[in-house]
Amino acid sequence: MIKNIILVAIGGALGSVLRYLFTLVTIPFTSKIYVNTLITNVLGCFFIGFLSIFLLNKYNNAQLNVLFITGFCGGFTTFSTFALENQKMMQINQYSDSFIYIILSVVCAIIAVLVGQRVGELFL
Image (cartoon, rainbow, N blue to C red; front, side):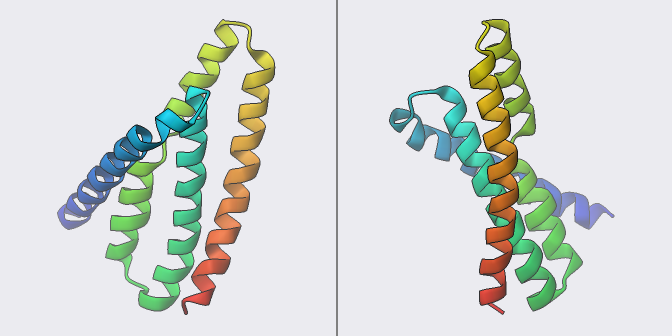
């Protein structure tokens, strides 16, 4: 139990730092703040799709799953920021932007998981 908590903490810290660095690098190239969150979450969904296939089939190690899927992907992706950004858009009556953001996030996230799983299968 304690070992898994430590693994989640390490993975979460790595994922959070990578998310922060990724945002610093990409923010100059995006016109809207939420684009960074969208890209980060879709990339995180790709990672979780890849890792769910690769780690399960290649190593089948519960501790690697805790470290990378629960910890790293949980720290890298950010549903709470997604929700806050949508709430802010709605407060300033940007309903169409919010709707587009929600649809893009959900559809692209599911596609990214599927693509990640297919890529994971290539490495088996």
